[in-house]
Amino acid sequence: MGQDASKAQRIYRVDRFTVPDGARAEFLDKVRQTHELLRVQPGFLQDMVLEQPSMPGEHNVITIVEWESEAAIASAKAKVQSMHAQANFNPQELIARLGIKADIASYRHI
Image (cartoon, rainbow, N blue to C red):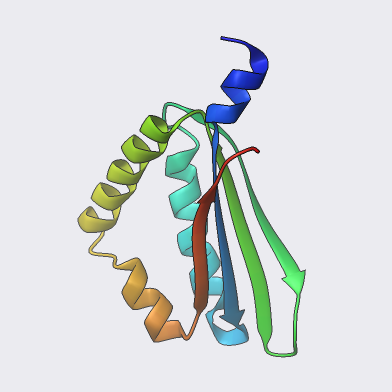
């Protein structure tokens, strides 16, 4: 398979969060825990956690994870869900409780 075909199969998970000041530390702790697990999964290529200055009282955080394929991201998702279940952690509850706004999507090269 050529380099362009391989690149076309890659999946980029891009999650954007608007995080209130008081929620930043707890939120970033959970992001770090999740990304530690993602980094050791088959098909993981790279990740970034980025922060943009925002309005006073808010932080814009973007996480980007590059995966080799759709199969790799599906496998990793199952591992993350298992880790969260074992820790009795519900990401949707955290987002609601902390007043975080989330925009979560996957992207491909065009």
